[in-house]
Every structure is written in structure tokens, then in C-alpha cells.
Length: 238
Image (cartoon, rainbow, N blue to C red):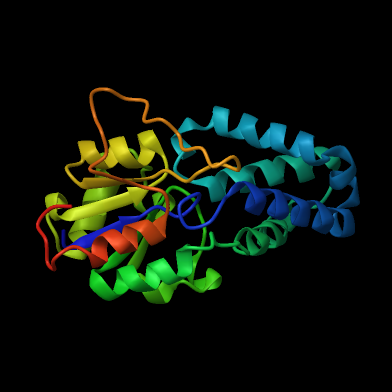
């Protein structure tokens, strides 16, 4: 194994509290700058519209930013507010979107992994590693929006491998999602690592498939760093 591609949301940090915080920040911004929109679209209505936009625009499934901005434009227009507020409203949302709280193991593990092999971030989300302060451990960040297709499409995995200068078979993709990360990477010819974090009761998820299994399953990134430290370098396969 000569390089690692890493998912971000729910792999390096939990995404649910991030989105809640970002939506609350957006709501606060709207109450100050577009109060009619805020009154007409409280949190649940805002989420419902966001889901409707996603359903109406399947061709934008890889572009969460564009989906969010379309929803904001509709909200402002419906409430009679200035649609020119779309960009600053999104900026308020996105600033909070990049205020993540890492899992306890993540930062130390990323430093350890980056000391051994090149790391690349490979995500369907729109987090900005530069703003988050993690870009220094990655060779590059490749998002679905920039690539034009989302995981589990093979093309995004192959694009990352090409940028790493590696054949897919010597790249390990690491992520939490069974379909997007493990099955997608497997079909694209990469090696796979399933991050199977324990829930609040200390329980792990059961692997749901009989036909395909991840090459490696670990509870967190710290365990992955331990595994890599115990592996000879370089290795052809995980």
C-alpha cells in the first residue's frame, strides 16, 4: 500500500452536529438580515425545502453547495427578500459548516498516517480543509463538486489515484460509509478500510454484505495508524 485516500464527514469528524450548527447559524443570519425569510422558513421548513431541491435536481447530487444556494434563492424570493442575499447567507452557513469538532483520535492519527504515506482527502461533502486547518496533512483535497461526480462513482476514485501517481490497487481508501466508501472503492479497484466507530453503547455495526468485505476494518483512525505503523513500508497490499 503506497497511498491513502480518506473520507471526511463521519470519518474524521461527526457531521450531524456540524450541520445542525451551520443551519442554526444560517437561521440567526436570516433573522438579522432577512427577517421575512426567517419567519417563513424556520428550521424544519428550511430542511424540507433543501430536500425538495435535492430531489428535483438529481444531476446536482454531487454539488451540495449549489443545492443549498438554490434553496436559499427560493426561500428569499418566496418571502419577498432580496435574492442578492443568497451569497452572504450561504457564507454564514458555510463558515459554521467548517467549524468541525474532530473525533478524539483523528488529529494524532492523521499526523501519524501522513508521516508514513501520502494522504488525499476524497469527499462528497463540501468541507474546506484549508479553513478547517487540516490541509497540511493532505497532498490534495478532491471533492465531488470539483470532480463532477460523487462517490461511489469509480471516476472520482480513479482521479484521486491519478493525482497521487498510483495504480488503484496500491491505494487504500478509508471511510465510514458502506456503499459510498467501501463498495465504491472496491469496484474502482482500490483496497478498502471500513471505519466502524462504536456507538454510545460501545456497539459496532455489523457488516451488511455477504459478497464483498472490506480489506480492513478498524474502530477509528488511531487503530488504522497502529496498523500502518506495524506494517512494513512500502507494502503492496493492505
